[in-house]
Image (cartoon, rainbow, N blue to C red; front, side, top):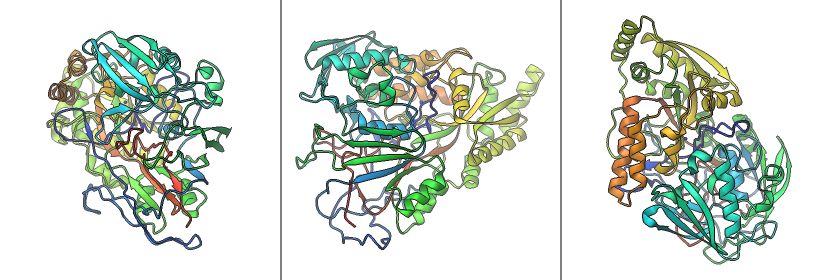
Length: 582
């Protein structure tokens, strides 16, 4: 469950609850279609570098009326003036420090994905409709009714250490990922990976997997140089094939990446990518510091998820901004279904019924629409049976539980040590207490929250989670294979193992019919709404904020010329980002 927690990193265990992005919409049956924002470029009056410009020209809209309840603010960006300019250093303010660059260790959060996407190339990416398409790969062909896939690699691509990105390198990388605690459950269907030619890889599977390329679009599909696999240098001095190469790193201060002059990528006009000479990442955990640094011009670009920060950016006459149109993650309470009283579905349903999303949204200042009861990252083919807010019915379920068990339900809710998260937890505590459920709040640091989630040592945890770009990426976090008894690491942090969910995911992987796959994902939604392993609290989106010099605030076209998703959990490749003379 990718992103964009946002992701809570746990290198000690190698597992996290994943949050990435999800901006699915109801679309024709098939693989989830993603709402995208295309940044059009056109002529604009050059701006002075000494006077902050007026509000940037809004070049696109999301279709929602600005200012309406639940509307996604339309992007406000400065159109390009002339062709992209090469050179310059982009300074980026990120929310957290990257603990290391060994892709097999843990799950990268949004900040980590932004950095990793500049250093490493993934085998696949998502096109503008949310479908996996080749990136570092040039083609992928299913065989044996989906029980095998042949991956063709782009010829001539080289890592930063000048070794070839060939079939042997990809086999070594995928085998390392299969051994990694975090990715072993995700890649468990793989029986073997083998070379069948200098640039050809064959992946044999234990069962049909019609959507296999989706598993290799993110961190699991990023390819590191064989010279670093299994070595300390993988974490401290990464070597990939991406648009930027490692320069220097001062932990908790700055990470410097330099232009990869041999990068294989080209823009639509045939110019070599990337445009920038260098990128500098500065960890800035404090949201106000990140915002103030961007407003002051000390930082060119920053990532924000905090409603107050985004609101300030919307009111700024200086900043450009793009807010992802779909929920990047969902703030939810993960309920440990292996511990009392949360092992009783009546208590879980009562918690959902006693939760008032509108009240929470009003209190914490978010301006996004409530969650409709669907798991983000899965298509919403039909309305689910997720319990509607109903305080009276919640109290009745609690009374029934107490009558049958002889005790009132009570548990501890772990929350991040953040004022907004704590305030949200206090609202939940109040409403749940009204229903007859006594809840204690325990504020914890990120590492402790991660341990709660992946080891199951806690009863309930409030954290951002869910939001993969493709439904198939939810199999490990929602299926029984990712669950475990408390104390053992698990990707399925609610530890709900339901045969019907597993059967539905297997049906989706085993069919090439879009209609049948869509129906299978809907069955997963139905079961999760019925069993309530998670209480939805609020959607979360990621905003990209930028000063007036920055252009290309999104992923550019794919290597074969087609459109790609502009963002993946707030992260984008930076290969087509450039700095204008202002």
